[in-house]
Length: 394
Image (cartoon, rainbow, N blue to C red; front, top):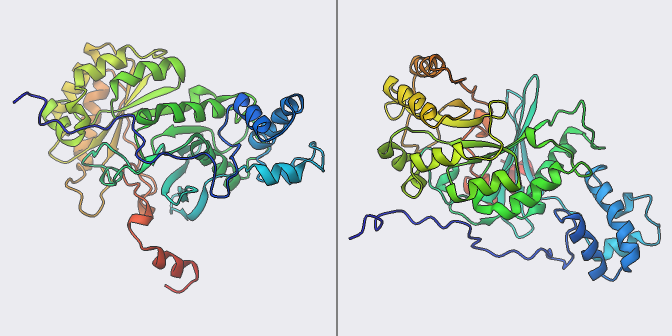
């Protein structure tokens, strides 16, 4: 029997449910298209080519700079043409099913796709920044044992409109239209919500290019971080083609422990992963790679683990920062959080090794919005129960 026989199958860049970009009413959604695709979609809908060139620029500006949710708002488009646009196209964001606000100001939204699948996004306000945690898939395929999201099955990849739509919904909620570069609450984006972004590379890349476009949502690539559990073959491509900051869910320093808690390690081991980090385009001391490390009691939190972490990062000469994440418990979780004293000792050892290792303050725990807790309420409550609650009955 070969050594690979027992490896957990990793589906990779697979979309189990193909999605038609046309919604239930048959109209193409113009959100999430490139500028060229937007123009071509207007032409395919019957607009003259010369006119489509101008109209596509106007519509793009209204969608991403003004936050328009209907064609009627687009006042520089001829009044007679707006009903035709309304009849043939849509500019939809995902549907908001539920919005919650934590005691610490963290906001979580339960969203629904046009074909009825639920996913979540989270906004975390801080004194000097506001970070939106964006999902890339409905569910997840990686089965990381400490992660609540990992207990969901993978339903499908999110489309570009459903990814960029999360940023637009956050801007709606924060009152941040028209789009402006200064003085806004939403300053940073992390692709750390539900799913593995590098298993949905094309759609994530297309959405982030709109987010980073100076004529689009206008957020600098330096303010966007993509988190991966270590899909090694896609990491260099991510640096070359998207160019955002990289975060890696490391969580362990030995093969035995990482195989257990991040099963992807059986396919792409720690050494292979760290070499891919060392080769990541654009990584330097000004743009360090963030290593996420969830603190699990008696599993990965010893002083020996901390020293081995320092040794590994130095061996690969990595421009690194380590985010120590206190484990956020959920019902049925197989682990406990390390004690504050243990976390402090671990952090001190990494700091003494010359590597920044701040302890992340858990946010949004009371609404299950903290790191590793995202799992759609659809899996926790029946639809009937939610409907009763919305009607104030239960």
